[in-house]
Length: 196
Image (cartoon, rainbow, N blue to C red):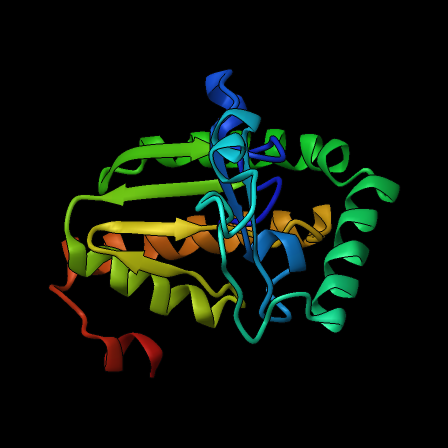
C-alpha cells in the first residue's frame, strides 16, 4: 500500500518539495517479502549521536533483525528492479489510464467523489453499505479491492499490465453501477445475495 512509487514519486515527501529529517523505509524497501527496515536521518540529527558511548553521544541500538543478510539482499534487488526496469517511468501511462477510467465514475449517482494520488484511488460512495457491496460484487468480475467506510479503495500492483488495468477499471465500474441499480430498483441486497 505504501511502497515506493505508489504516489508516482519514489517517496511521498517529494510531492511537498521537502527533505525530511527522518525517513523510515520498510515495506517499500524490500517489497514486503522479509522483515527489514532502515531509518535515514539528516546530518544535523546524526551529529547529536556522532561520538562514543563514553561521551554519552553514541546511539546504542540493535535488535535481532539488524543487518539481516537475506533482507539486505532482497532490499538491494528491489532497488535494482526500480532502477533497471524504470518502474516509475513505466507507471506514468498506467496512472493516466486510471485517471481517465475513474473520471467516468463521477457521473454515477451513488459516487460522491473520486480521489487519486498516483496509483492510489478512493471512490467515495453515498453509503458505507454500497462500498462494501461494490467490493463483494467486484470479486465476481475478478477484481479484489476493499472498502474503508464508504470508500472503495483501489490500489493496483505496480506491475499490473495495461490489459489487466483496463479489466480492473471495467470491473469496478460495472460493480458500482450494478450495486447502485440494486439499491434503487429492488431494495438493498446483502452480501449473500450479491455473491449467490
